[in-house]
Length: 409
Image (cartoon, rainbow, N blue to C red; front, side, top):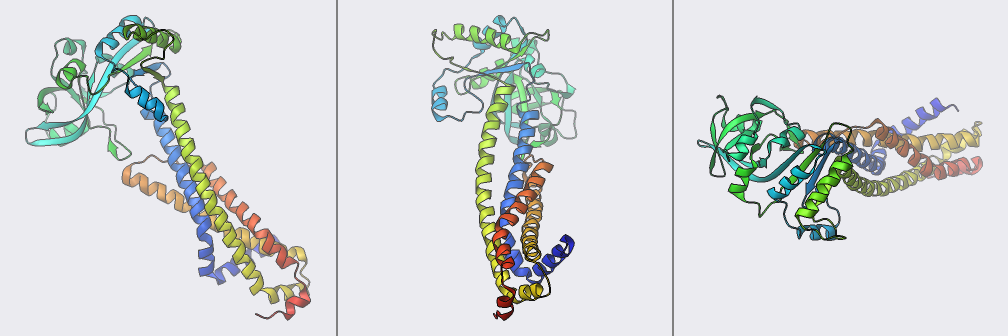
């Protein structure tokens, strides 16, 4: 018996018992679909985090009260007790960091923006210094960015995102228009380039105002500012600029020698490293759950194959009586088991990809289909078919043709 004939017989046998085959496939389908969906989401989110959320560049560092991604409860509670970073801390870093091309400060909260009778909620209100726009590469489609004069004069001006223009200022030139942010009036001086959505949340619902105006309106008691630094472009190592900022802050905040910093300094690499650890933990946990599903699916396949061997005992006897060798019978049932698992693998891959695409379309969660994950899913499915199909196939191959011919259901 050649391979092609064995595959044809296996498919015919599976088709003859369609309902049983479908029910048998469920465990494998669920397991493979889970793996594919998780890999697709994790890969997509990792790519997105690397490109957008933590896209600081190799020469940028952030100083904050506490880490942006904290995984240790004790560290989190300890960091909560630290004093907030204030504008004076930013000024100390700006004066001391000789190897920084730019040093900026940013503080933010959620607020409400109104124009006439129209309003938009949950707007990201950011108080910034002018250099922040340079450090994070904020692009404008109209107008200008906040400058030092706005800071010094406490000018109530704002650079707004595309959502505010579309919802509140549609059909008119936004520049020069007056909007109210949490009750205070601001003049629109610039419009940011449209960014789109992330995880279902718009990135264009924001308003940038001078940090001096922000602190006058909201104060600095509830939120700590973030200090952003960009190392000089003359080949100076980032660590040197970070050390200058760290020394200046420790001195300004009176951190005692030998004690830990009362702030957190992070870079693109450190933030991505923390995120990678979190995503890998989630991925491994899901793989474990999917593995249980695959084992259950494999056991079901083995049971069904044993039932199939029992049902086809006379058929096996006839084949052996007509000259089929033990290896022929073994190959036939083993291929049937593999085909059953591979079909489940294909359906699992299609289901996993479909779920990922649907979720991406509904809530905007980033996803990235990896060919290695598809290949790995099919390989695992085939391996399950081989592992759990060997015993039934060997049992069928060992049947005595005389006993098999006498067998009656």
